[in-house]
Image 1: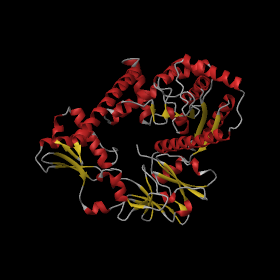
Image 2: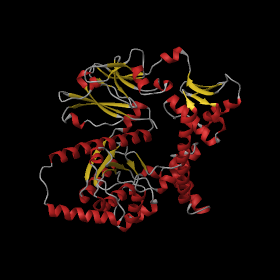
Image 3: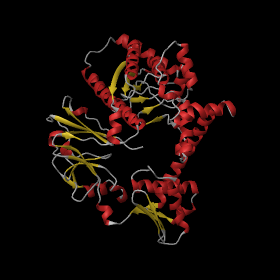
Image 4: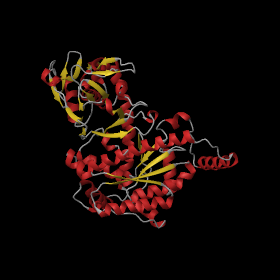
Length: 502
């Protein structure tokens, strides 16, 4: 089992020598297995492990028992442990999200927060490390680690650039092969395109899944052979959840009556589709750059293979809407169908988009209705010292207890000088918006900033902003205003986290 996981890690470049790994450990069989395996592997790969356990406050005393169990395991293994409490029922009440979605957001928010803490901690340790260890002992330890790494084909990466970035921090979650096959079937029955049939990614950004090569049966056998106990969640046995029906009823039936290796075959098919999806995306990107100019698809693209043409159109819709949520194959085919229609024929699309047949191709743009253009989404986040969190943006106020040099460059987490903010809202753009672009107070109209960044016109109305009046504090996903940056003189820090929609 250990060698199987280690080979899987190396083959898919899931972890690298010297990584710091945040492990999401619930106490269930999968995550406990992952913890023990990575602990076993850590000496060979020189890994530093940090366990995070989230108490969702859904299952009362049982949830705290799980937390206590994970804490005890970490103590025995000498692994750093942190429990984070998330009031998921309150999140559901405040945002209208499902309990499952609220729990997922709470977990990943906790994982990323811990990653930030670990990075700050490691930078401080490196800075404060003045004493050098005994050179002979240091060399011996280094040689042992390198020899073990070479034995398993693990490559070292000690570059300073990597250590100073977030490349050496991973967040490990314990999805297994069965989870992957269930996800593929769930997406298939719910309705999806090729992407939804590619399964759970082995790695995406900081998130890695080292147990995707293992079945649930292999995991439970490993734990039994090592006499390792784990916690059981009764909700996993409840069949009112669609995913549980697939796990507990459908897949067992298929394995018993059609093919006992069904789960392996489903995952193999997903891996094949993932390769096809990757190739299709590369081809579509090339054709998009060749045939799409100023939101118009040149009619020469009509001769492309249907799979490539559909993907190019899908990309056009994504650029126009700013996202792909709620965009289906039906929408793509309606747009493609315009190539066989008369000039000026149109198709209405989600997010106030319209596709129009032109003499020389097809355009996808925002509707020109001025009343729609003037509408902006706006929600107050901070007013008179009171904080109002939304589904996508959470605000916390902190004392400036760490140096401004520890303010990290994260895309969806930013820090600001709280005392400079009068009133903070999250909204879309409106006339008169500006952003401060340098430390000397130089201003730029938001419109000009969008032009300089080459952000498509149709996408600009969808980009969310944090704003203090007309002064844009943060163009979410892009940059922050220089005026609100945290400095050494900052007393109170406002931290904003944006949780991107799936």
